[in-house]
Image (cartoon, rainbow, N blue to C red; front, side):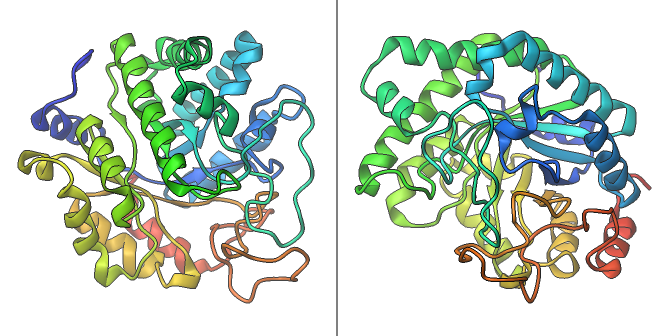
Length: 352
């Protein structure tokens, strides 16, 4: 399976059968407050990643969804070498990787260099958008140079790693139109995101990838209908986010599938974000349903760390310890937040 055309439904299902059920986590090392801190040479920590990948394998996980960033292409050889080491480590430990290129969430002005420390108690306090608000504006405004820069970044990564056994999917754009300090006008943000969405699929297709391309549906508001439709009709494998009560899971999946044509409702599907204890979307009640439905399950996230995602969305600075962890599976020493959760993961694990 390859190439410049969108996959057929049959190709997506053949991919699912070949890959098997994915059960994993969105991943960021505990030392990193954002994507740049994970990947820049000064703060890249392969030993820590190895340790945490090992903890994940012990918990039964077999996959990670990991965010990249366009600014890392400023040191393209170094970045690709670090990504190569992570891919090799994933292969060694039996993990498959879903790699994410762009993201509209959180802070809109990313910068290379030392990243500011996490704000105590504040969820995702230093996460940064990719490519950032100004770059997205330039692309939407027809800036050919900016579009070429982003195209070169996407193309270089796919050309280098599409054939790597660890890489299982290309997630081109996380939550287009997403939350953050972006514009006063939501409509303007959505229009710009749509331009970038169309662009990144075109750039990625131009490489002729053998691994599927996707962008996950995440927002059910009517204002997102056109974005949802384009995400659906461009993606080889259907992906989506779900943080609701599991009783609504099947309904939401049917709703998201409705943005494609009737045949698309049979495409392979992966839930690339789920599990928020504060919304009662739990391993105990949601993961078994995903497995029963044959839908891949990638929860947020692995180890408590500088991303502060144990705190809920909208948490205030210096608000103290959360009563219940919002996300994350393990403490910083690798022990479980809740041993019963790990028991559920091990019991459902595709590792056997």
